[in-house]
Length: 309
Length: 293
Image 1 (spheres, each protein chain N blue to C red):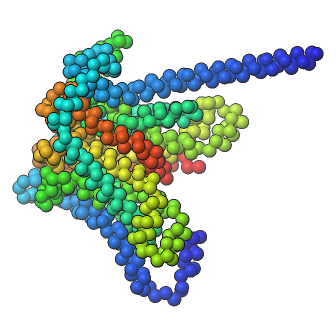
Image 2 (cartoon, one colour):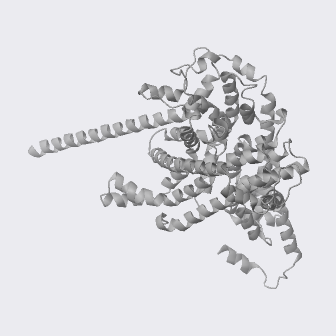
Image 3 (cartoon, rainbow over the protein chains, first blue to last red):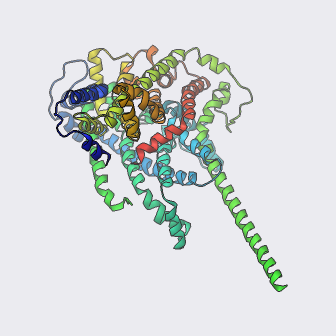
């Protein structure tokens, strides 16, 4: 409506290239110029270089040679560490995402209750998100220490002999997942809380009149209306957890015996410890393809479960 | 008479019912307070442990059961940590300052133009900008390393703030949403008074989106302060390192005692908490703005 009125206000005979119009274009591009420069030099140029590099044996020192599809072939056929890193990443993703979203939903429901001081609790659950991954992972590394660590001490109180966690090939990844859930649950919680607060009270009133129980109201009102938020979170959580790095870098360094060497960690090792820049670039593109594919599949599947009212 | 006693009995029953309801609600609330407090303790325990460990003598840090209230405060830990960290702290503060001011200026200019100016190619440029979010940052990391190597940026601070300032899609997107909500009349009035486009942006529009600027500012601050990949990959010199990354890199060297390490960790988190509590409202608003479309 406003647009229409504006268009009508313009004289119909105005020339297309009036001085004013040129000035407007110039001004507009001047305002966005820094961002345009940024996108070109820190995004498009690097993308082109990255794609080219993935077909070379670049090592950052000598002049790179073209090796065709060799890097990609090697990834899929000959590199058992690569296969291991993919499996480790899947293990992490399968543990991290359901736990994070499930706990975030529980916390959001708790924080949505009309109670005094509820914002204090919300802040407490959210604080880990803003803290620094290095500092808190260092703390957790002491928590997980087999002797003298708080976690195994707590387990011993209920008669369980805890594992060696970070130095145990079976338990290192679960330890990483525990820290990642603690660290990351606040963000989805805030998104879900906003979703909960956006549900009109009238739906609950209607459900009450129809005799729905508390569980019924949750199952047939709350949950369906939260599906768009949950969908958004699943997509973003998939993208970010495929790229987990910081917690693992500090807690385990990919160990023990590669048990927590996830995709980005192995890529980091290849690129910056072994100077295999070409090979690591190929890894980056494979990851991008995988993420794009998974996002696309999720997008297609959303019709089956996401409800937009 | 019968009526009266009946009525009385009814009120009494009503009162009793109300009392049970109230008692019930009290009980329910008590249950939820207990549950939520227990969860809060679990979430805060690592931070609490960090602070108390930073104030203990080393031999008591890992004692069990853990005592979260040290009897003797050993402030020397902080004196010791301050012998090493001022340089790292300075680097972190400097980078955060450059990033935050740069991001605020660059993204607000662009966001204002995208939201309110009418120019050729605007919508195309904006959609290209948004599309760059699709490719994960890891893809550009290696080529950026190669570029920086060629232009002599390795082992300088430039890679840690220049790209963050110039390629900040998320902040531009967030600010654009806010600029779009400002009524057109405000801009028209200023234009009639003869204000230039830049004056309108600076004097009229920017003050209108202060909450959004606060949100963008905090995001930029956290992004800079908590950056791990950047300092790890692009810096070699000890004297350029940022505080959080230095904690890990020199854990065995400068911070070999757990209590001193935890003093350093505490100092690396205090600035974030100060900023967070000062502007928590805007920060949470910013998150929900981008999460729910």
